[in-house]
Image (cartoon, rainbow over all chains, first blue to last red):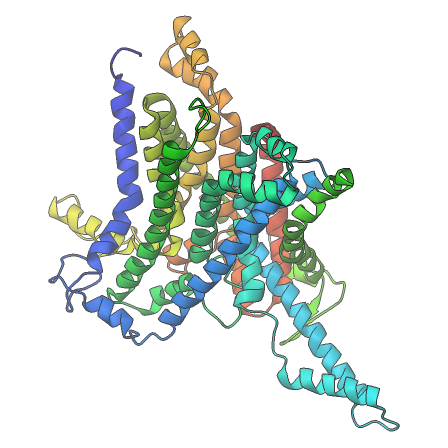
Length: 319
Length: 293
């Protein structure tokens, strides 16, 4: 067991290698096939090598909205990332102390993580439909009761005009940055919260006490002591926030209104597109994901490297 | 003054999280429950208190017994997928975690290998499913290879848009949910316990069964909850990889939403929720998850 490598090691290494192949093989396949020649098909053999399908993609491939969908997903992903980081840090801070409802809030977050996405998605859609019906109902009510009435006053005219404005302009509250945004948060926040739990479980409160003893306010303690220390973990939260939002489909499905996100568009394309252009789109999407993961890892490495160089001056005496 | 401030601090710090979950999770679930008793017209849903939606969801299910109605068959088929995917991801996830914790000796190597298993989780699931098409299609890589080595004389049709491809994709996408929690539990096992088992004469399998598995129980339970709940509610993977031909509990709800039959969809969502909660409750009886945090 301890001398050299056991037979189990080689068997398990082989299993791991096969699993890695299983994990990455398909993605690599479409990566290669997205460079298929102009006359090539959806599978091997490669009929030449070209950027034809990427040009095709850029030109709009006769499928509108792909670029729009990509931009939608990027914008939403960015908004979700920022919100997730801020809310997770705040909540992580809160959970270090006892407060009423802490358990309930924690289990709500876990429930939000594991309950079926279709149920969450439908729930949000229904809720917003009720909002819409209520607003439209109020508009109708105002118009019925305050427009073209006898003994009109400035006040009734005002209410009547609100009613008309609602009837004329109001369509829906549902959209990418309302219901869609919220739906994504129900998915990213539990991950953010769990990461913050892991962070603060290992966080030594002595640093904060030292800062307070030296006269720092709560905000200064957070800004100049805690935040720099937890910053690398926040990159982790941001990574989860962006990638989970950028790739989210199940909770988006009923909640983004008339807008489309990239995964939703992609799902639609699988049934209509029969050329390698869909692989080109897959390559671009995966490239975005990898760029984000790579950036996160790179920042982490740089931070670690700098800390190792400048981090602790313990033992070096008074400089 | 400071005392007062710090006592209230957790409340405003937790408030944004609580508000988001209230508006986008708790309230929607309550609305879904309420709407499952409502009626609907072509363009709106109307408050009511009727059981019609549940009756529709379980149409003829009792009268046609022992013959199974569509709803029961759908749930049975979803549970079957659940069971298969759970078993495969459990064995696979456990094996990978075991390899990383007990066989990889260097911490750096373990971190890198663990990252390798997690990175795909941060890429698009839809793309990862589409990626199987050139491999499993009628003229795909697998069929071409099987034909060329002479194992089959004509292409296999059941590789893609079939039960097989659905299970394959679900395993492909969700094994990570098993690996991470089991890895977490396993890396907390005191290695001296394993040594002690060997020293007192236990075989590898005995150590695995009597020491490592019981001590990984929490991770196994958390991973199982993840995988089972994901598969129970799935409609994207089953739809895409099943060529939109295979029914599932989630797909039924999706279809009813698309038909604007919101209250019926809500009733089905409540039923699905109850089943999922029952499964979670059963799994939680085996472990105390709070210990893990």
